[in-house]
Image 1 (cartoon, rainbow, N blue to C red):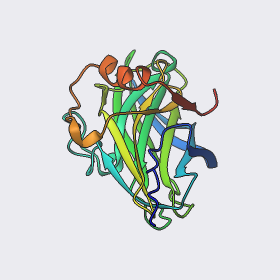
Image 2 (image 1 turned 180 degrees about the vertical axis):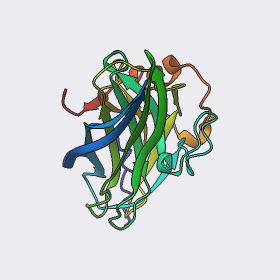
Image 3 (image 1 turned 30 degrees about the vertical axis):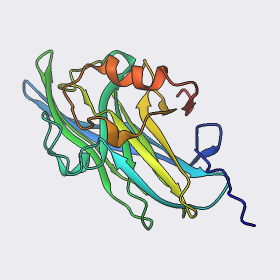
Length: 230
């Protein structure tokens, strides 16, 4: 007699989310004002998060709602924004806060971030806010990254945007779980929540209000805020 086994539906209670492989360093800012040109170094920071299924080994992941090329977000065109799902600022404009999700693959070292030129108080800043980072260090896990670029004063980083990002995890026996990937209200933390099947809704609209994206996270029964205040 054959006995059926109840399928597992993964939620934030039954997946593992691990913060690991953090990194940091300096990035270059060149400034030009009347009769003066110079450069300074400002700090960047990276936090990687790895999501995987607890009951059985993760087999594959479907990811929805992100800029696949760095040119699809409707605002910025920069290949270093490929795989980014949110372009935000924190600390009243003194920090650029970027959120990425990566296809499950071998370890790789992409260049992530953006080149920005800003004029403030008669000073023009050429901001090389990007870094070569390492992602996908863990096998059988989805890697997400929160990347920050601090600046010594508040500036206008340009138009802010986000996608309603989500992903679906499959283990080796076909059990699944669907989740949203977002960010906290102050844009300083990465947030993962339970979600309806991402394929049942429209993802990829970068023009939707930020509140819509956060509601997707907040209305779930359980949301996991991952990260540490810097």
